Image (cartoon, rainbow, N blue to C red):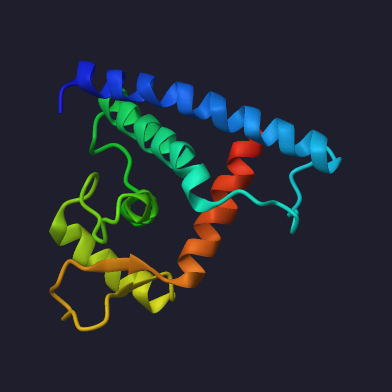
Length: 151
């Protein structure tokens, strides 16, 4: 993917993040939330509300690769988790945007051992039907919700 295409895609995420920021600010005012980054059980953001934040993080990671080189940094497990989180909103079940399939297979085993991902029922170990577990979805949602409050 060319640099201009990536930058264009990253620019397309900015309006979505602005909408997300406005929603968060409105909810903070409505709920009289304390001005900190602590957990808030009252938070009602749905995963689909946080997809723009995950897309923004992915775009920033691709930009970092463009500037510093793709081989300079490596977080394949994080890339897989982000990709699966975004994929949930698109009814896509396998990572594939940022990490090669061979790398994905190695890291899926690690993520599965941690209880963060699983193969869909009826699929075999080589099948690409990989999904976040409830634990994985909850942790990603919590991370992205907190990250959105920082932005």
